[in-house]
Image (cartoon, rainbow, N blue to C red):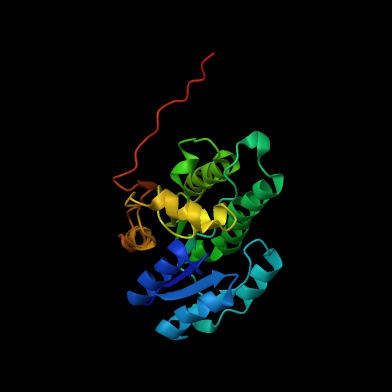
Length: 249
């Protein structure tokens, strides 16, 4: 039986890599994102019978609903939801951070994620499906400038545990994947387009790649139905834990 995955944030990074990984393995994939020109090559690569592009902003609940209602028959029964769409905005400390940036992160990383999850839960329960939520080590380990971003990812991780508890006995699996440093467009977006800042961060660090995380997503989704990975934290070998900060007189 061919299974169907819905992957949000599929225009770049983890999401695009995950679409490739699942489509190559024979899954049907609904790839969502705001940029149609980024999604179309995925359809072209595997054909419209394998990949369907659903173009909408996850923050727009009406557009989300319209896209789901318009799914072709072959993609209507969803077995796996990968909540990957998310972003960080800004690196400033809380006292000088942009409130607009904070709201953008909350709207995308929290509100949109719970809206889509709530919409798909009935059919995921009916199909004994799975939910994989992409969180971050930033939701576990604080760092200067992480403020609202870390808070949104802590929500994702805790929300996932709550789903796991509520879905007890339903057969639905719920997993949080919490990546550390991975080189994607993440830092360019976070710095509002500063490619030099992104290059500086990753140069010489041997970070993880989008393909690395896509492989973890696929591994979790491919496990036997009686196994649940509750939480998967993954970092590059080059990254570990920072020391505590101490302010001195």
